[in-house]
Length: 536
Image 1 (cartoon, helix red, strand yellow):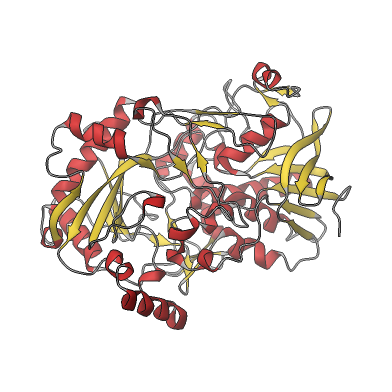
Image 2 (cartoon, one colour):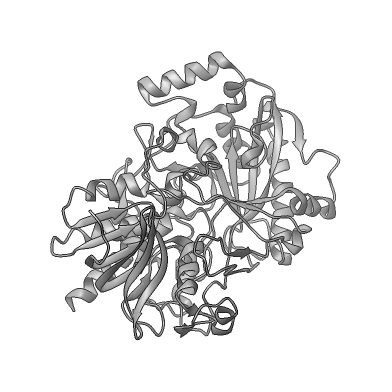
């Protein structure tokens, strides 16, 4: 059935972490006619649903936008690869499956920036509403929600050794990074249920698709928002069969993420007016903050050769071990293929003036290069070191008025001195932990950067020359009331009507950790605000 000319109450653009949640929640009211559009296809790939499949989907153009940044000045002109999901579930279908909310102080800061209703105590009920925590309900956790959050079943001795060695250096064990405090070392929680990935599509969208009032359109690229004066009234879509238009009577909700939401706004004439004119886009509303305030987690890894054959590298280097791991997953949904990208880690302070943790370790029971480089051909493990509250700021601008052409992505990584200091001190700490038993007993030698890289200047150069991002891009449609704010505290686009943004782009500052959990929370809170507005 053609959607051309069809009318809905709500249209949600993007079926990722925010969009799937908004669409599913709005469709709980049978009176709402809801359309969610997704530029990618269905999440039918086998590799999406097996946890370790992120190693495949992270570079698979069938489910991945495969963006590249502009040359980064502070990185010697290097371009950085940005994997972003182009499939139902968005990046929740290809990410590393780690469930981290960030620090309470992150959200209190949002509130202090003038965003009423976004402090930690304000957003905690939405985290709990979303969650089905296998440990049960508590002040910090919910049960019965769509998103299953589990503890790691497969525990590698390397992870226990990391936690013990960190403890020997005064970093306390933390059994729940999402509980009363974030600081400490411990195991990560993951969006995995019975050995399978839990994406926003499987958790929210698939159950909601049984409702007759929800329509899901895949392979539908949003070309432009349609306006009647200052009010958003629909969308122009590019589908395999041609271009169509759909209408909305209540609200249009952008949830394409920190790249595609600002891109669509600019394609639709909402942004810095002079830049839009230069590209042949007629301005509809001058809003200079669209695409600004870009933030991401940039860091680097330290890797070691392992004294025992207990790493994922050993599994993948052996055909019999590969077959056994595959059989375990197929029969029992466990084994080395059932774990997230980072099994354990820590949050701690490496700068004297930091009041809360300023660095995150993502400890990996494998070692290799970034993305397409693959695993090293020896038994090895790694620690990815990431300053959690980066001060470096970048921007996103249109490269063309054609929606199929990616925007220019200029994250300006590593441009701030504090970011560089945290990375350097973080690597020193990682070395100290690796030199402390029991983790030291598993180390035969440091592989990268290598023992000859010792001085602060050499370590900083190593981060510049080899570092990468964790793909936690946020901030390009930031929430606030300052001149560069794009949405208000209700996520309504400033100066326009019937238009909201509900994804990671609204974060005024990046949270201290992985962004999936926070973006799902944003979707939950956005859906509640939209429903409340309809009843008002």
